[in-house]
Amino acid sequence: MKNRLLLVLLLAFGLGVLAWAWWPGAAPTPAAVEAPTKLRAPTLLALGGAATETVASAPAHRQASGCTPIAPLPPHEAALATQRAIAALTSASGGDAVLALLLQKPAAEDRAAQLPWAQQVRDAALRSGDVAALRWAAGACIQLPQATVCRRELLQQRLRLEPDNGLHWLEWLHEDPASADEAWTGLAASRRWLERPGAWLERLDRALPPNLPAPHRQGLLNSLAAREADWAPPPPADLGQVCGHWGPGHALGAACRHATTLMLTKSDSPRARQQGESLAQLTGQEVPPPPAVVSPAIKPLRDCAA
Image (cartoon, rainbow, N blue to C red; front, side, top):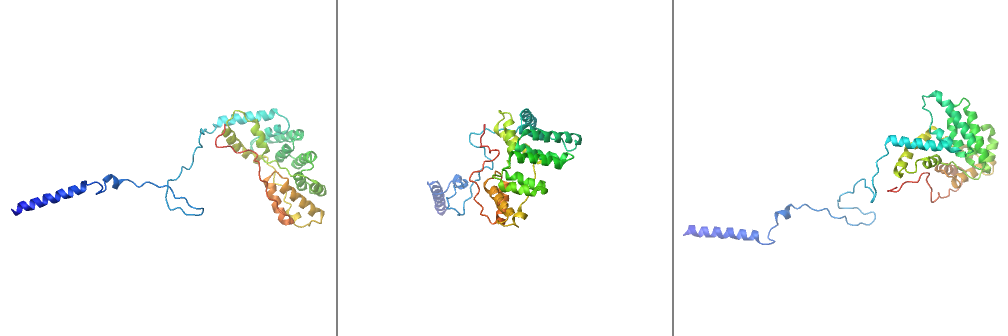
C-alpha cells in the first residue's frame, strides 16, 4: 500500500514539473537565451559630450554615390599623353615652346647634351617675350659657361616687360648688388607682386589630350609636378636685414614698407604672403586678413569627374 502511494506521488510531481515547463512565458526559450545582443544606435550628444556606446565603424574608403572607379593610367599611356602634350607645346609659340624644352631636359649624366639644351632654352626664352618663361629659363643657365650673364640677360628682359613687378626688382637686387640703387628705386615704384606659381602646370594641362579623363589628367599632372625642381627659380632674397634696420623716414625703409604692402595685398603667391607677414613684424605694419578666396593653379577634382 505504501509503495503504491509513493509511486502516485512521484508521478504527480513529474507531471507538475512538465506542465510548468510547457506553460507559455514560464521559462525562456533556447533561442531567446542564445540570441546575440544587437548594436544600438549611439545616443545623440551635445558638442563636447562623450559617447558611451560602441557602434560599427564606417569603411575607411568609400566610393562616392554614382561614381565609377577609374583605374590608374597605365605607364605607357601616361608617357604617350605626355609626349603629345610636349608636341603641342613645341608647335606653339612664346613661352609654351620654352616649357616644352624644359620638360625635355637631358639626363644629368648626358653632359654632352646639357650645353646645347641650355642654349636653346635661353634663346627661346629671350625670343618669347613671356615673363613667366623668362623666369623658368633661368634654371638652365647653370649649364652654360657664363651662367651669370645668362641669368642677367633673362632678368633684364623681365624688367623691361614688367617694370611694375616688385619681384623682378628684388631678384635684380640680389643678382647685381652693384645696381642696388636702381633696384631699390624700381622696388619703391612697383605696383604688384606676381610670381605666377603653378602657371606651367596650367599650360601643360591645356596641352594634354582633351579626351583624357579628369582623374587621369590630375594624376598625370601630379606626377609631372616634380619636374619643376629642374628649373624652379630660387626663393626671392630676404629683405629682413635691411627692413629691420631702416625706419619709415629713410628711403630704404619706405621702400621696405612698400614692398611689404605689395606682398600682403598685391601678390599671387602664398610664399610672398608669408614673407610679407615676416617683414611686417619688422616694419611694424598691420597685417591684413588673407584673401577670402584663393584660386589654386590646378583646381581639385570633384568626387566624380568626367
